[in-house]
Image (cartoon, rainbow over all chains, first blue to last red; front, side, top):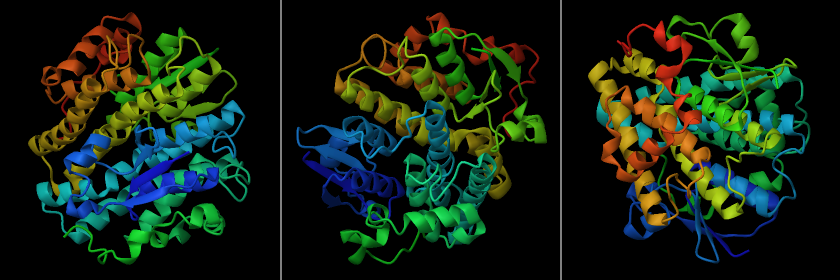
Amino acid sequence: MDLKLHNFFRSSTSTRVRAALNIKGLPFEYVPYVLRDGETRTPEYLGRNRQGLVPTLERGDGVNLTQSLAIIEWLEEVRPEPALLPKDIDDRAWVRSLAYMVACEIHPLNNLRVLFRLRDQFGADEEAQKKWFTHWVILTFDAFEAELVGAGQSGTCCLGDTPTLADICLYAQVWNNKRFGIPVETWPAIERIFKHLDAIPAFADAAPPKQPDAAQAQPDRRVT
Amino acid sequence: MDLKLHNFFRSSTSTRVRAALNIKGLPFEYVPYVLRDGETRTPEYLGRNRQGLVPTLERGDGVNLTQSLAIIEWLEEVRPEPALLPKDIDDRAWVRSLAYMVACEIHPLNNLRVLFRLRDQFGADEEAQKKWFTHWVILTFDAFEAELVGAGQSGTCCLGDTPTLADICLYAQVWNNKRFGIPVETWPAIERIFKHLDAIPAFADAAPPKQPDAAQAQPDRRVT
């Protein structure tokens, strides 16, 4: 497959898709965008992705796939192995529920455009943004940790010892948390899984600091 | 299947699951909760759903399924017909991307606990909350509308004439928008699809005002 990933190194949803592509063993051309400079608001980019968001996965046939979870479900369907969802239907539901805890309850509240909005509508300074960001992470990571421990199905990964969609979302979120100095050590099961994933090349190679646009990036000023 | 839906009539994620169950022709026992009164924060409910969120789908075997999109994907796997995802893999990716536009970019920013947080952290009054809510709806509905029109794949529903996961998320969000007086007429393609869906019993019967707990509910005071 001829694939181009339009993305940004710090973007958590981009990290998810990079990890999924790496796990599937699919090489891709890396096309970086600087969100803060409005590079995803150009007519050309909006033609690929009407929301002006990253990531977009451009296929060789010209089709542009958007929304990280839809891209990953598509990858799972066209390239089933190694699987990112378990075979058992109940396990799949559980893995998806964990993934959506991150994707629907943390990340949407904490991305760059939301922090900008808090600044613009409520005058939120860096400290207030950090408080907001941290609030949503703690609320859901506490429940995520309790679910990992309570369900008793975790091994080195969220479910057993094979990385799934849940691990992908978790891994990307832990990286995102680092920006606001939230220590993963707060949640022992999450910490254990994160460290395991971070030693797997498919994950580690997807991490923000490893990307080509990380080196030239401006310091992470956050939204001030 | 012996199913109990723990939910709340105004909850948009609950509306999604009710519509999916209706489309699949699966009867369920309706168990209502008043979010504002903390009824989902009891130890008993947290045993079902560690996030203390609705909906939870309780099966006869005692398993509790959480996260609306995970529940719907599970329903699709155990009861494939009528299908909520198209057969074609590219169509599936497109339908999921539309569903996630609502589920990952609008709803997470606009639910009750977020509005409470805006009030508590930033002193947001009803007017400020409405401004916040409306901002996120417009941003994503504009893109959703453009995608529906631009892709040229819509009929009476988002994709052709068969309701999918995208229609379920869209239908629930339009109902949610009504709380803040956002007129669906702003987006002609969305309006056309919403009106079509609202004439289908499986959708109409899932709408908030039709639920048993709607009749006894207190007026919608919003978060003041």
